Length: 114
Length: 116
Image (tube, rainbow over all chains, first blue to last red; front, top):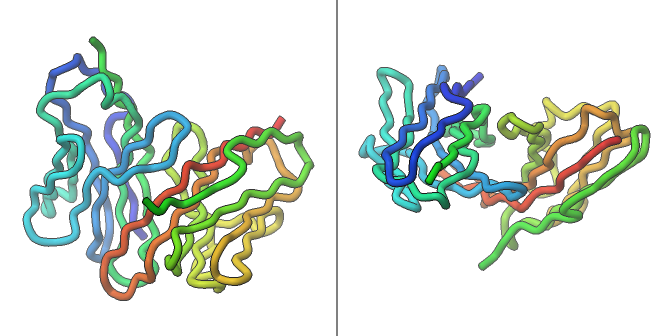
């Protein structure tokens, strides 16, 4: 079975400051890795994904994430945040073969202060 | 741009009543997922369909929850009777058939259920 741990439930940051949201996963088989964003009372939007290849992946809205296989981590970063980045962020994994259901972490609430 | 449709967006019901949620996936998507997201937690898969067949319903509380996708297109998730602990956001997602390659899951806006 797969599991995902997001190490921070809440992250407050000042506008234009950098941010890192941490994610660790556990799996006995190879997985795909994802970050999703959720704005209040909305569904999930895919920010970025790691499938294979380069361990640094870039996504929408200026976000990027780095896959570290030895540390089983997939941390999300942004060099300068905006008020509009205030949202809930979810790290997720899915196995490569078969049904590809998503297993999510518990989420990190990112709050941007002016 | 094609989207996953869900209705209703919000539902308030009393304990022991029956409720139903509807999902219309993106046209041509053979795989449909229902997730439950309890407040403050990440989504958890309830049931996955491949066309009209159930692929995974291991986390579906089958004593009160049922799901169907009769013609392999839209789907209905039902709860009967509803309990206080069922209050959550119910998310539907769809994707092309996963055949050894990655297929992105697209999420609908969700149905927010409140059980009083």
